[in-house]
Length: 400
Image 1: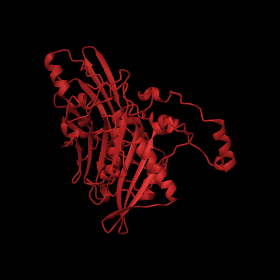
Image 2: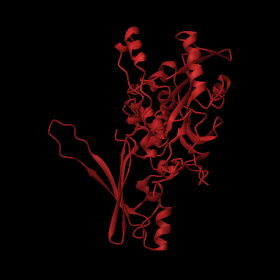
Image 3: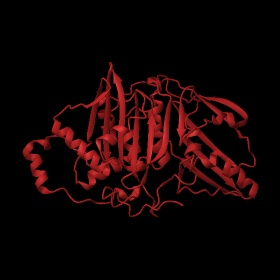
Image 4: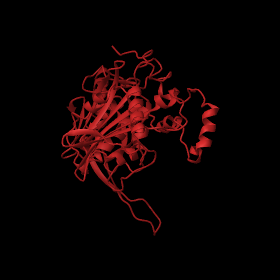
């Protein structure tokens, strides 16, 4: 039975509107005029501000929830060079209101206090390698805010023998409920010395205490001890992202379905009509990955990366995802090298194209193109043939 989440407000700690595509239009109270004048008097008006509603507007670049999830998978894949061997994607429960949360955890290099602040900032990236997927410093913000109204990050890092723990809260709910006119991200840092965890204060103790209070008030955790417990299942380094106040559809149901398959995460509103004309054809199409990837995260993530990883796994709800190379699923395959016509002074780039028929053809009347860049699926077009009609589906990829 899908859980109807309408009316659950997390003790007053959620937005009035929990539908993603309507949340940006929901108007909060205006900022008091007194606060505006205070900013002028203190000199705080001299810096540029980014209104919290930009977090929502920025996240609308993801039309498809799985496109947002893939951004978080990419962050872990980019950490393979720092020793990452897995990313776990699973469901957890917010003990404050018993609502589901989406959790991503990897064993990459983690982020030190400076690194996590850069991660939570808009448009800042330290990724300079030509092999990394993300490079523009925007993916974390757009992806987390597309999946839920709030996200909290736990990261553990070792830099020059110094072990640090950092926590950051990116909460659209907090910003809108408290009428902030600027994006404020409360941060906490700790240092591990001789096996003991001690607060690491960069500003004043008052600022640190204020950040702790905001995080406890607006996160799923009620004490500093509960926050630190989130590091207990990490090894010496890694990152955990917890997304909560997940978005709902217009019927008040969670957009992500955790209940129908305990080894998968499904998209609730994706139509599962195969368009088949016979029972046999319907069975083949419904089980084929080209159909399932529209609503099954396990199916989508299995083809997200072209080449199989050697020492890295995507673990979805406790079970590793079996990677599939679409090119190996073709029969009568032919490889064509495409060289576009370019100006004489331009760099010549050639593209290898694998062309073939699905093994289930002609019963499986599906045609399409997969485009990969840096080993990552960035665009997929599908055309399904049923009788005389064609239906075209565009599966969102991240154009890099």
